Structures are given as C-alpha cells and as structure tokens.
Image (cartoon, rainbow, N blue to C red; front, side):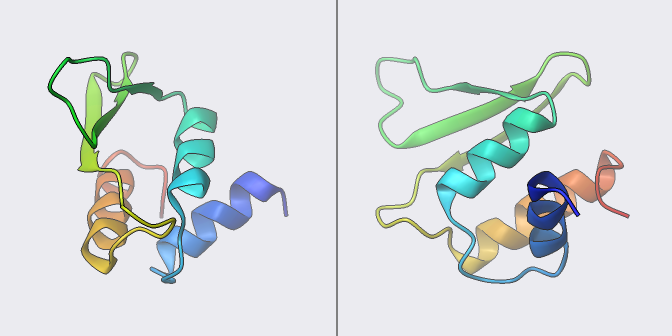
Amino acid sequence: MSKHEKLLEKLKRKQFGFTFKELENLLTNLGYIVDNREKSSGSRVAFINDDLKHSIRLHKPHGKELKDYQVKQISEELKDKGFIK
C-alpha cells in the first residue's frame, strides 16, 4: 500500500490525528493545488482541483492536527468526488 493510499485509508476511517501536512500531501496527489493568496485570507486555505471544478476550503489549524469536524468534512467531500469508496 502506497503512502497516498494509506493517507486515503486514514481519512476514510476518520482517524483523528490527521495533520494539515498529510492533508496537503494527499490533496496535492489527487490533483488539487493550494490557494491562500488573498490579502485577507489569514488562516483560510482553499484546495482547488480545476479538472473537477471542485474546491475544499478550511481554516488552517493552529496546531498540526486538523479538528475532528474538518476530517469528517473532507472525508465526505472526497467521497462525493469518488476518491473514497
């Protein structure tokens, strides 16, 4: 199982302790780019996939780990797009 597949499995199981860096690596491998260029974006980050015309927006956590609700939200978003079965 590749690192990419392990991250998808971890997200699918909604295992907490999922870090922002892991999310960034996972979504980059799925074709998303990170966009936080707006002047007033602050901790807001958007992951954008132009091919799918899809974006995932969230606040970057103050610590390393994502909040539980963020893990659930992202998991559902990726299920809707067919990345998680």
